[in-house]
Image (cartoon, rainbow, N blue to C red):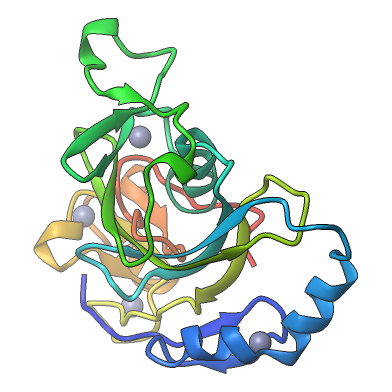
Amino acid sequence: MPRSTSNGQCFFCKDSFSKQTIARHLNSCGQRVLTEKKSSGKKAQGKIFHLLVEGRYAPQYWMHLEVPASATLDDLDGFLRDIWLECCGHLSEFIIQGERYTSSSPFADADEIDGLSMGTELGEILQPKMKFSHDYDFGTTTHLTLKVVSEKEDQSASNDVQLLARNEPPTYPCYSCRKPATQICSQCAYEGTGLVCDDCASEHECGEDMFLPVVNSPRVGMCGYTGDEAAW
Ligand SMILES: [Zn+2]
Ligand SMILES: [Zn+2]
Ligand SMILES: [Zn+2]
Ligand SMILES: [Zn+2]
């Protein structure tokens, strides 16, 4: 998979910023101030963390999130699965300060799960500037790196994960004709000959069953991942 740096979009004002400058923008976005004023007015409810999540080996995929300290690792894992990861209910885990926190899965053997529980609240573990990791699927693994950008008092009463910003979909050339690729052959993805446009897909020798859509996620082309239908 060729790398490219990607710009991203602010969830509040929809403007585009580079990966390097968007964190600063999020601190001063006028539209965000207006949005958050509307939903606040209550007393502070506790702390809230600003997190940056990115693909460890695909840093062109990234998101800025806000997560209340009272949310659990399960809540964060669920959000990451919904927007970037979920294909067939694989196990996942966070590794934070050397400790493993493993998801529960109805498909997993109990003895496969040897980490701590994801029921732990973020506020019990996370500190500003802390870096940690998340792995989804212990077979065809998608590795993510997370960083606590900052923490502040939470003005909202919600326990939900809030998306602040996200990279715009990177475009990749078809390996054969260089037009923008729309599909990826999961068989050839690792040889660098997996990305194809619709025209060239019909001539690709692995057959249609091997194709996955090119989606805006670090899990693109892996296992059976077809993307988040609700993505913006
Ligand atoms: Zn903005
Ligand atoms: Zn899968
Ligand atoms: Zn092509
Ligand atoms: Zn192929």
